[in-house]
Each structure stands twice: as C-alpha cells, then as structure tokens.
Length: 293
Image (cartoon, rainbow, N blue to C red; front, top):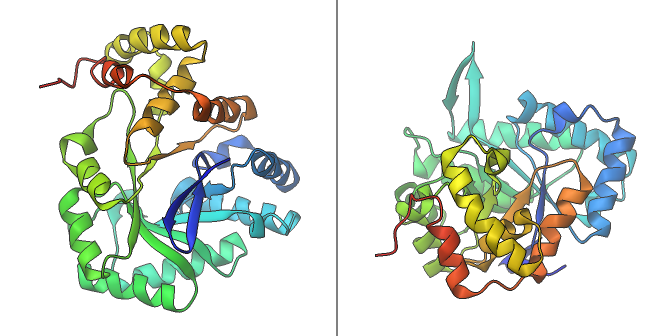
C-alpha cells in the first residue's frame, strides 16, 4: 500500500485503522493482536486511538495487545490524542502545558510504548493558550516521546494560531468529512491545508454508518448518486466514498473504524478506483447541502 508523507520522519498508510470503538469489541488481547497483524498484512500500518476513547480503556486494550505480540509496535505508526476530559459527567477541554505533558506520559504507559509516532490535540479549545500548548508539544518532541505533532477538529484560526506557536511543526488536522459533512470545506480549513501541503486525516468517512440509513434524508439523497457511480465503476458504494475522499488534492487519509476486515478491504479497494473529475462534484453536491457557484 502507498504511504502518505506527513513529514521527513513520518509517513502514514493511505488507509488508517481506527480503534474508537475498541472497548465495545469485547476481544481478548490475543484476538486484538491477530486483528492488528491482519491489518499490517494488508499494508494498513497506521493505528489511531485517543485517551478519551472508552475512558482510556481503548489505549489500555491496545497496550495489552502490544504486550501479547511485541513485534507489532515496531511495524506501525501509532497515533493518539489528548485534550478532552470529564469531571463529574461534565465534559471540557484542557490543552494547558501540565495537562498535555501528563496526558502523554499516561498514554505511553497504557500503550506500553516509549513514544507516539503522532500526537494530536483532540479538539480546539476556546480557552487555548497557544504558547503554553506549544511549549508542551515542543518539549515532548525534543524528549523523543512524540515523533510529530498535529491537531484534530481545529478551525483555520486555531490551527494557524497554534502552528505559528510551534514554528510550523503541525503535520495534520484530523477532521470529519463525508458526503453529508462539509464543515471544514465551509470554514476554509480544507483550502488552507491544501495550500500548505498538509494532509488531513479523515474520521467518520461513512458518517458513522449514517450513509446507509434510508430514513436520513441527506444521506439517502447522497447515496442515490453514489450508488449510480458505484454501479458504473462496478464497485461497492463505500469504496466510492473512500475514493472520493482520497481524490481531493489535499491528499486526505481516511480512517476505517470497523472491526470487520471485509470493510477494511473495501476501503483498500478504493485506492484502485479512478473517479472522473465531474463525478467528484456530483457527490459533492448530492446531499443538497453544497452548491457549485
């Protein structure tokens, strides 16, 4: 599988395996290690998680799998995130210096590793102190505890503010994008990333399964077009969506979050689909939310 270069020191597999729902899979460490090796055998070598997933349980379970098969860790690029917390059921963001440093140390322990290949701030914080956060990320990189730094779900203003504070070291913004979600197109974030040569990671490319809900009017409208294009290419509609995401010149890297290998295989097949340029625009406006001016 081809790699997407984020920096001189880090390239990701063109499709990423996500572990957001890992705690619900109810797998043993041995079963999870077997799944991870199946991903690696397919060329999917980038694994994505976060401390908030499962209330830190997902990181813990991944660490147990790495202990089960210690060869796995050296074959992958490991991504985790920090910044979302809960206090008595109340959710809030914290990207202050001490919190970022402590969170990274805790993630490393749970994951049974001495470094993260990529560390992301999970959400843009309205109360972010760019210099404080930048100091933490820069120190973690100098200490070898993270290879590269990035963000997730940031708008252009906060992305550019933090990127200035870290002297242009942010290598990605992990954002939601699918045929019914265009927040980061409308904010200008996708344009900024494309112009800067920064490849976004894409979560929820299938809208968390919503794309296949016939009772969701936006998804149903989009799928009518997607299914027509899929028939033309003799491809699964899911693969068409992945191909549509990867067609964009930003060089987006989609995340597959399923524990089913057949669904991962569908995402991988998208790498061989060659959409017509006009087909990209057909899907872009299929839900009725976007217009071509």
